[in-house]
Length: 371
Image (cartoon, rainbow, N blue to C red; front, side):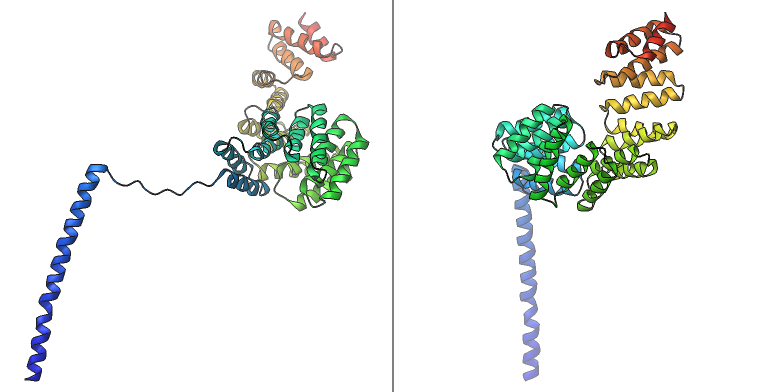
């Protein structure tokens, strides 16, 4: 009797379970139908997206990418920061630094000026303007900006660095060295301070010492392509061609977005008579930066040496159109046209070369040959 009661109770449990399952299924169908009706009226909910970081945070991202040598990513971060906050002066200043280091100096000056317009009482902004102006050939203005930077903050090492470089380019070597030493006292572990010490040796013609200092700078941070350009330039002056080539190749590896490395690599190959290899590197330079005038000029010279006069004309013309004013490019254009028996096209180029240099022997000879 006891066992029969237990079995009876156990069997009676299942109808409740089945009832619950049926009820749940019906409720779920009703809910799904309700959701379908609501979505038909107002459409599906938007997919959630992550919240974008702030302008200040973008600057921090740019700084991190810059120190890693990822200039394209750093540039994008600084630009985005200015889009989110057009009044964030520091983003413009650091944006201009990358443009300068990539030799896009006209643009760099304009961006740096924007930083100073927003905040002229910042040593960093004045220093970045000094750098851009100096590399753009506006040395006197660069000195003024550098002096302003050191007055705004006498403890800011980069103010003395860029003032030093401007003094050196102006020919005030003693003042340049004094400022470089001041920067070194303030921040000896700064890669830009170390690099500037190398430049001080270079402008004095102490190329071996310059190389040692530039190498010291790469040990502080190996991710900056311009340091390898400095090294290659000094190796080439000393005739250490293989080491120059290695340095320029390293520059292209560290920052493939900078045409300077490819241009200098190609020009070094050209100096060794390796014209085909030079052309390959120079073509990469103009691919990376279609506005790189000297790379087009170097391509013209390489094609001229290969007797490819039509191609040489194309590249020299492009260099001139981009703003290059070169006696050599002018008379080379004249020679190309004269070798193609087109003296009517050659004569104006010889004349332009003589306008730059009335004593240009090759231009005089070319003009006489055509006449």
